[in-house]
Length: 165
Image (tube, one colour):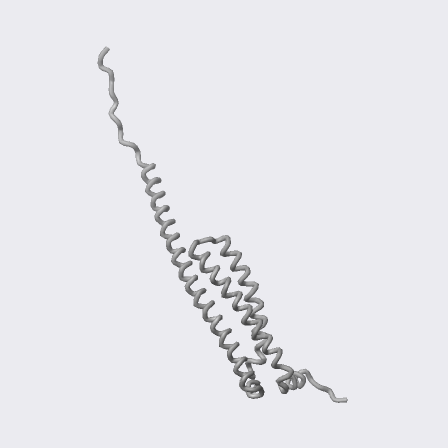
């Protein structure tokens, strides 16, 4: 009876494309599907940022967080494939290799689109924050003027006396 270590079992898993190829295909397709959903939420986020709907924005951000956790889990599952990408791609036929590469490129493009949109949303939120800050500063100065004006003593008004009588 031979004793096979976990490391050897993992190595054997990657020796046969028939064993790892379907899993890689599934992981890439799942990642793409999750990123398409994230892209949709990102578009909703942009709309909500533009119209300053904070309540609905927080809801979308919560949904995004759930998706990002799933995306990160898939990325962890993909890590062993990524670390030996060239070796694994050399084991499969060109059509399968091209299919994997196409999926990887589509995933990269989705990540770029979401990242760019998030960057623009951050800039818009910063502009909105600056506008609110300026408005609050103006209100604060206005209140200060009202308080200062209220502390001034009114000018003495002349008193009239009735000298007749």
